[in-house]
Length: 234
Image (cartoon, rainbow, N blue to C red):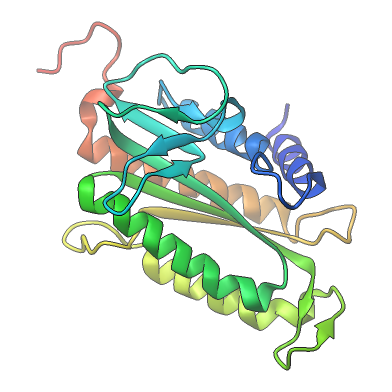
């Protein structure tokens, strides 16, 4: 399946699932895993097989896509715990599909908390953040009144969110502060329109750059993960 079609199917699948579904973004996670595997990663866990529980300083958290070392074969569905393994790559998939002005600050707070917690135990881990922003979301305006779905209602809030997310995406030497991440991918859609994406080509390009950045950071920190089978490390 062509990349654009695969991404569109994954996003529509998530949008059409119940709001309370914890498996809403399974297909999008599978898409992310496929793009990472295309760059040479093996042993990825998560996706439609179920979230993976990873220990943090404060508490364990379920992540959507995980690479652990040493690598073991993935198991069945549901939440999987691997207490003896260290995470090397983590992806968190989120969305803002309703009440954006109220949800956006919470998304940033959640990101800072979950990222800092795991980085305190595993400072070398590479973390990516994927978020779906719906310009056709319903919610409340800045004055607290109900607002109709419309991209113009959320434009300023979404732009501010993207700016702050960009400020967090700079975790590279010598800047190793906890709470920063190695990459993010914002998928902007309008669920009121058949075309769905605001700009599909730009979204795909940003996605490919996102996966390149994650794999590049991982290759610098964990080069042995990219050795060919049977190749000696030195």
